Image (cartoon, rainbow, N blue to C red):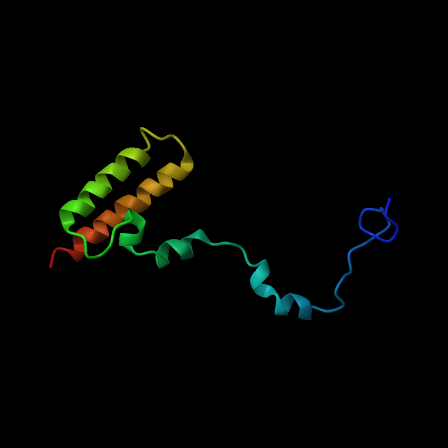
Length: 99
């Protein structure tokens, strides 16, 4: 259809002659690692509350989220992972407020 373009069938994408292009743009080719993102989130961010909120409010939010994402109620895999994050975050909040 369009000679010399990728739509004509005879066009091939340009290939780099060395690896310098990939070294410059290495950040674009890295895989997404969800484990690193989870570690960066604080327990308050996971629950969606601020650190200034009292424990009663945080507990209410935790219970409402756990009802939504509990594996017996919500059958998706993502919900199960979210439920584990919420539970871990609640345990961290309890540990922080023991003092």
